[in-house]
Length: 238
Image (cartoon, rainbow, N blue to C red; front, side, top):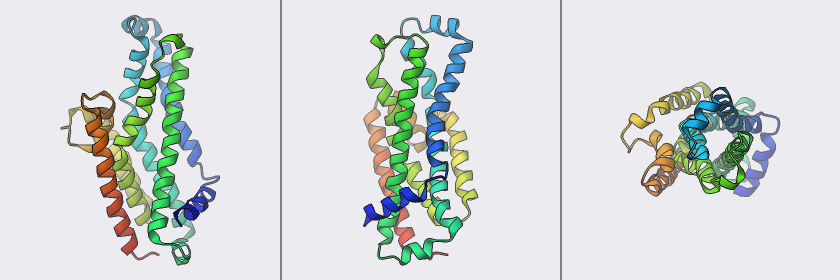
């Protein structure tokens, strides 16, 4: 049943701008670093002469959590708004399909869109490095993959929480405000204790115990998703 719900959800988001936002984040982040390197090319290339690719990734890294949290917030809000604006929850949940399947399909859809966005980040940074003349022979393929996907796995608690809020609250301003606040606060994440989830996307890429924070993200994400599912199953719909 979840696959039927997921198929219907892909049709619902057509023309809603979700794919545009999913592409805008990673491409915009790469473009921002392109501007940064373009304006200070000689200085930065001299600074990172020993490892220009490493320098590029270092400059990208600290903006990844901000882009992730903003992207998650907007994707979840827009997905949920499709149902809220049309007031179609009652019709949807009256169909011979369980609430569990509906919620699970929304989660899988949001996760897959996020995967596409993170893939675009890896590709965009790789293309930027090539355009800056860093050379394909020294391209750190694994690091490029890591910067795209490891922070994403560590940010799954935020994805689960934002989807929970977006699906259960008709007023999307509340979930959006929380997500935007989390994005801004994540700029100072390195000052937080390691147990704060907003810090985990950074630690999943640059921390000495990457696997610990990836695992913590997966585990807490599953717990929050389960709590959201239970609440969604019990909540009355408008």
